[in-house]
Image (cartoon, rainbow, N blue to C red; front, top):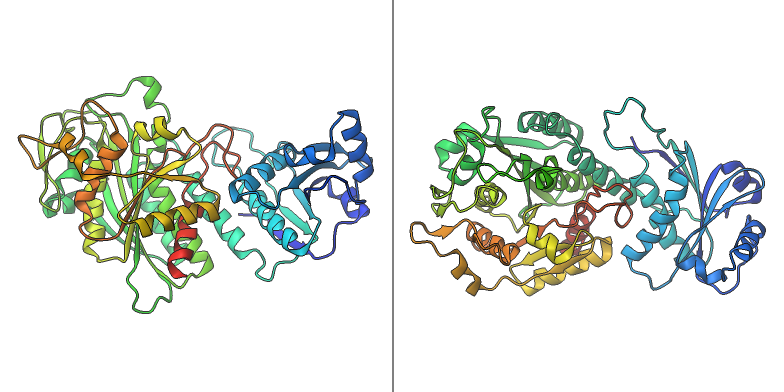
Amino acid sequence: MLPKLAENKQEITAKSLEDAGHALVLLPVSKTLPELPGSAELKAVMKRRELKIDALAKSPVVVQLTGGTLAVFAMLKADASTFETHELVRKALAHLMAEHPKSLALAVFGEEAFKARAAEAAVYTALVNAVPLPSRKSKTDTVLKRVQLFGYKSASGFARAQALAEGNLLTRSLTVQGPDELTPGVYRKRIKTLAKQYGWTVEEYSFDKLKKMGAGAFCAVAQGSPARDAAIVRISYKGKAGKARPVAFVGKGICFDTGGHNLKPAKYMQGMHEDMNGSAVVLGILATASKLKLPVALDGWVALAENHISPQAYRQNEVVAALNGTTIEVVHTDAEGRMVLADTLTLAARAKPALIADFATLTGSMHYALGSRMSGVFATSSALAHSASRAATVSGERIVVFPYPEDYDSSLDSTVADVKQCSMEGEADHILATRFLSRFVGDTPWLHMDLSGHSCKGGLGAVMSDANGFGVAWGLALLDGLQA
């Protein structure tokens, strides 16, 4: 549960700062430091370290105040991007959160427009990092219980920041759970529990049902697991959207990926319990939209399975038929993500949504292209590409839009099937994977996000944990843009 948020329009007083215990103070960039609580101690620290005042815009400064409060001071640039603002606030708050406080004070100073922007960033960053992620350590960290904001009061009570923090926390909490904790079967039960909490409807396509339907691409991957608990699950949120067609969010949910017969080496199998992150992003978006009661209709489609090695597991050179009739030559069993997505995208497209956006930890080549600080996006039109870019700017979750021209299809030509699953050479695999997936969306407008930024060592943007929930805030900003 997120901490209680209290707002005070009055700026923080010396007494309140002294009683705070842990406090973050945010100021607009200036060459002179205004008189404010704690400024004398801050000036002394700056003098000792031979820092100019505007250095606070590059690196927060920690000050131990006379009364014992640990205060962190930082300056925010007026023209800083959302990502830059979140990064600086995260780094400032990290000094305070390292002591696992039960309460936290946030103080903003400056003109009203600056206060609004600084307060939104501070509240979101504090809330999204307030609750420790699931852990089986015998000793757990103290949970932040109360956040008090001074200097600004929001008309909405920061409803959006609170909902986004809740959705992001759900995504990360699911993502970090071990493969023994979050099997496809357990995941399906968890989704039903979430559905009761948020008022969703759930429809399951079990392995046996999908087999009868002819979803050969999904079943080829899922058949390697003796548990037979794999499924494609449709989760629906019915906001007051009138007769508008829903937006479909699709997520890859491989709960553990061994690589199958093309077994991953230990170095690359480590962390493969997080290969279901795309599905967790979908649930995080749905949770946030539900919390905000957005007037939209949303369908979440999650492909839940494991990629096992077993006598029943699919093999290279097999030819399987996908749900839409496309025959696929299996080239590499570790390219399972595009297989389960193929049939899931087909189901999503059959429901005639206004847009499909899918999320998947899909290719190593995207990680090589961008590292772990951004994710790659593909779009079926320039208008959609612009919408995706705008959502990235607003949310602070940075993307790069990639092309996927048709001439790349020649690398997927097969002599025994309609298409190869992938190329053994591995060149431009993020583009080839998109070309492959494009065969399963029909003429539905489509965005595909390859989540290279889902985990970044040391945190990313507003989030302090390695697993950062990338895609939840972007998805909400995308919905805002579509509504506008």
